[in-house]
Amino acid sequence: MTSVACLPQDLPDIPDTDIRFDIYTNSRTPGRGRVGDLVPGRLRRLGLFPSGAAWDFMSFAMAVVAADEAVSRVRSPDGWTRKIDLTVAVSDPAFWNSESERLTQALRFLSGDMWSVQFIAGGGMPFPRGPRRPRPEDMICLLSGGMDSLIGAIDAVSEGRQPLLVSQMAKGDTQDQRTFASSVAPRSLHLQLNHHARPPCASERSQRARSIAFLGFGVMAATCLQSHADGEIVELRMPENGFISQNVPLTPLRTGSLSTRTTHPYFLRLIQETLEAADLRVHIRNPYEFQTKGEMLKGCQDPALLAALVDTSTSCGRYSRTGFQHCGRCVPCQVRRAAYVAWGVPDRTVKGYKYEHLGQKDARHAGFDDVRSVAIAIETVSLQGISALIGGSMNVQLLGDPTPYRRVVKNGIAELAALHSKLGVT
Image (tube, rainbow, N blue to C red; front, side, top):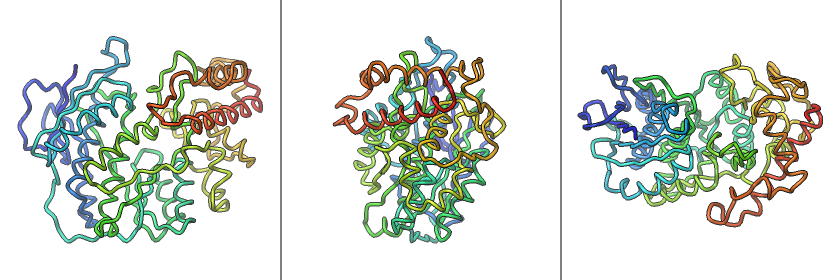
């Protein structure tokens, strides 16, 4: 078990803590990490003052990202599953400790680790309230720089909504996020934030929980809208195709936690229940949970705008490792390439793909693990049906009626099968 504490700089250390993070401050205290240091200044300059409960939820999200980056998987018995004991300072520890069991359950599902979470007093808003400028937008839409979030933002505007666009800044995507925001919703605020987690040790590269920060930023922004101040429930749109959201293991050797689960319906349901218990009046919604990526492209409500921007969107799971060029062979890249095939529009992804010809029979192409895993999944469905692939990963406890989720996975595999056929992957 590794104990991690995420506290304001002036709070004393907690005895027997293995890793300490200072939150919302550019701390340089030896032996401590820091997280969220740039967030307060950005919000203060914009006159954004989230509710106390939203600050606490964002502090929880920041702490999860910090712990995820700081605790190495290498030292765990199986090389993957970690035991993390997380302590977070908030303004209302009594309430958040009442939600600890549900949040722990959500984190275990999200990252595949054994979490325990507790909350202590001393946290909350890190700066005094100043002149408040409630925002006129009527919803929040997360904008990552990826294809799905681009479609989500385009569709929101096409529906007559005025979304406040929230981005988590990432190297290689920051400028694309700005271009998308100014092109899709030029009259809306585009809020770019970064968790900026800096552990006091080597960073753990797997970082399966990092995207919870994105959710924390979205919840925070939702409570800064005038409509929220007026007592309305604010939609927080998290656009993601249903195939990726389900994250069904492609082979028996691949577990679900090997990829992000941040938009999985079960995880979102647990977080939604906590937001409702906190009376935050924020409704998380993914309108594409029953659509594949190809279906999202075909159904976009402004095809011309999508066509003008989509080739600069980012999908690759190894983007920074391949010189900010799509690798073309990771699972997200294959899903992207398959979506273009399903859409019937030429794939002119900027810079192309580093590994373009997946049918080439060598270790870097057809023999690469992700390509082989997709090929095995395609063959499994072809020979044994979709139930053989899904196994027990979809059930009533997780999803309620699993039928529409089974359908989206089946359609997603069909899109990948069409891609492999076109590229000659056997």
